[in-house]
Image (cartoon, rainbow, N blue to C red; front, side):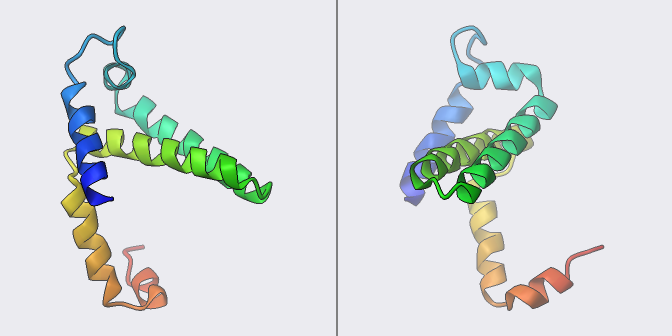
Length: 105
């Protein structure tokens, strides 16, 4: 799975300078980080609604949309997949409650 995500990230990065009328990713970059972040929020809400409706097929689809838009946002912010993996690995050593309680307020 990591290879697929890395491949997708390379595609996302390669589309950054494409004409925005030829690439959805380029059109997101052209609209700026605020729009990209908005799309992440929209997809998160759509995933939540699918879960509440117990619609597994829609939840899978919205999960893919959310992951894709998160990756566009990561790319825009200069965040790499290993950055996310490193943070997840750090959290493996903590209980979920301890990690949450130790977050800056």
